Length: 221
Image 1 (tube, rainbow, N blue to C red):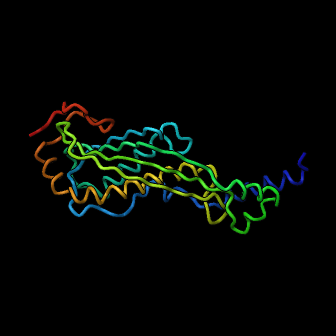
Image 2 (image 1 turned 60 degrees about the horizontal axis):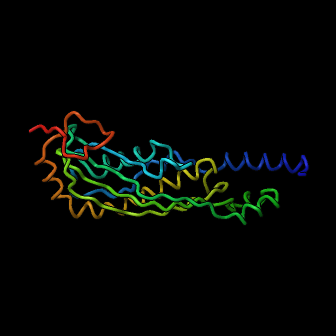
């Protein structure tokens, strides 16, 4: 049985660890800064979380928020309130593992002393594969691009993130890297996509919840 002194020490160290970790708020929904040279017309957003729906890290809205910010900031015309099609994100694969169990055992044996010196408790690593589809207002899929991202988020005092948020951040960091991998592919096609989207016309009567899969979108001339 652990002694009361050890229990108190562990509780205090855990409280210090949580309170001294980096905040995830400023990085969670920050897309990679790269932007298309030729921006696409303004687009509706659709997201299929796939395996992220079962993740204990990312919430149901996290991928939607990150993807929408990326599209609005880096891919499409931010000034146009009309929508000329859809940008659909599909998360194909997502797998997270926790590593560093040996370090965690060492921390427990030494009353969390190494954490005070910057030694991490563990890492969360997420491997993710995603696809982005550009769909016209008529429902035609103009292009599909795929990308992969792998993240490694450390749980540590001062130079890491809190354990309660590390898995969530690992999921979003892997998605951010996958989207960054997709952007150069989009950039090569941007001129063609822009022309095709404008030719197809404006979206009317559909929300961003889901892009029409069957070409049934109504179009304004």
